[in-house]
Each structure stands twice: as C-alpha cells, then as structure tokens.
Length: 132
Image (tube, rainbow, N blue to C red; front, side):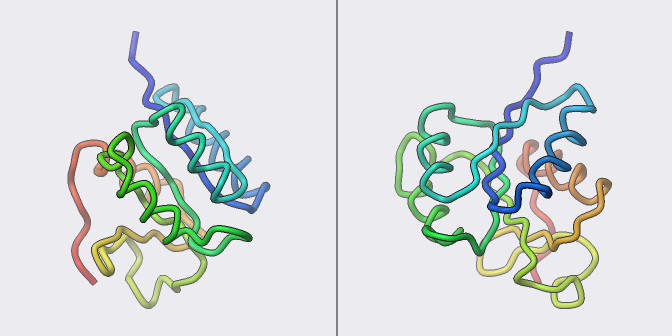
C-alpha cells in the first residue's frame, strides 16, 4: 500500500480548493488539508506538518508571502516545500510551467492538472523548476 503524502492547501477560493482537493485525492497518492486563510494555514502547518504546502499569494488577512515567511522562520515548518499557486502572475509572465521567482516557486491559476501534479512531484523529490 502506498504511503499518502499530506498536502496543505491554503487558499481563500473555496471552489478552487474543492477542485484541487478532489483531483489530488483521486490519485490515491495524497491526503489534502484545507485552510481558507493565512492564519488558519499557519496553525494547520504547525499542527500537522504536511509534506508540501500549496499557498495562494493574495488572501484576506495574512498575505501568502507573510505566511511563507512565518513558516520559514519556524524551526518546525521551515523544511516544508511551498508552491505558490496564484492568479497574481500571468502564465505569460512566467511561462506555461512553474518558475522560481525571487527564490519562490510560482504556478499560475488557472492551473492544469498535469502542471500541478508534475510540480508537486518535483517539489516532493526536491527538484525545482527553472528560474524566471
């Protein structure tokens, strides 16, 4: 039996969260936890210590970059890979696939299943996409 990886999705768009959760869990490889704001996401990351975090950039309350900074500063969560999944950047700005911008991995919304799955697998294996 395959050991499922835990992914924490922090995003205020409930429909997006529902779609991503269904698609990831359907593979049988992932368990997905949802947080709909930055503060909730921080608390869940510290409590559950997921294998990977998918993080929106613009949310009410704590901004995604603030969440990422807090996670990196915390000894318990700093090693968790973070992928930003955001509509703040256009795919034309970073290309069709994820890119590293300012030391962070960004994937643009809307995201295709193939791109999302490949970037999750790469992050879990410790690989990074090319720099933008």
